[in-house]
Image (cartoon, rainbow, N blue to C red; front, side, top):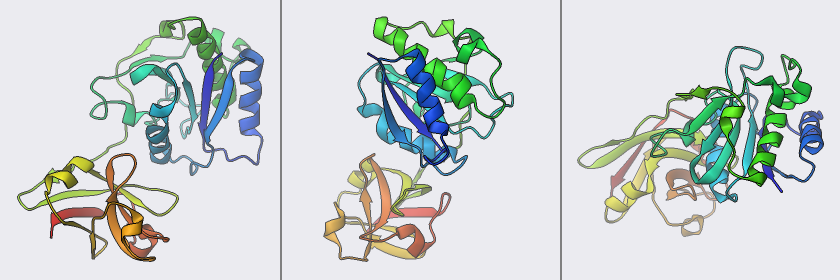
Amino acid sequence: MGLITLTTDFGTADGYVGAMKGVIASLAPDARVFDLTHETPPQDIRSAAFALYRSVPYFPRGTVHCVVVDPGVGTLRRPLAVAAENEQYLVGPDSGVFTLFCPPFTDADPLAVETTNARWWRDGAEPSATFHGRDVFAPVAAHLARMIAAGPPDLSTFGPRVEELARFEVPSPVEERDAYRGEVVYVDHFGNAITNLPDRWVDHAHGPVVVEAGGKSMPVVRTYGDVGVGELCGLVGSAGWLEVACRAGSAADRLGLAPGIPVVLRRR
């Protein structure tokens, strides 16, 4: 029995997700299908990438993650099948959505192929220029899940090897004598601003630290309950990165935070 997750920017009102599930059910009727999220903002590659980064490691080995956040649908961008760490498999466009499964976030580049073999597309036919989720990615995910259920899959059956995936830039933080300088890389649904400052740098500070962002200085605490309702703070989130947060509120709205805004971590 295969396991497939779906991540899209389709929402659930228009039937696009239903069409993908119908294709999967036709080709792999025994597969279990989980909705990871369909609320990614339209064409927001970063949001989809962070949703995957937070979720994929917690699925069983052999899970296929089908991703359709695809601003380049119908163009020459490559359709991919990827073998990531811990036997997790990714299917989707080469849009940068798999950035966080590549170095420096992993030790080595993942094995990836371009899924050009039309045998594995829906009915082996020419796909719609606007709906590769239904005609390419869903059927490839279904066939891959069936292969995995039978044993280790040979990704080369889907198409030729790809040496380097498209990636969006994730800036590296800078360590200085008395501070660590980074920036916001993502804002989540709650208005928490996730930075590129890793938890180990909070630990390296060896004592009380503050985070500076949006013209404010805030204490770095262990959990939201360490500050009062409506107060700003920094804390290490579940993914292991420093976040700027507001208890029971949106730090992004309060401070005008968005990707690219500078953040400084320093000792008190």
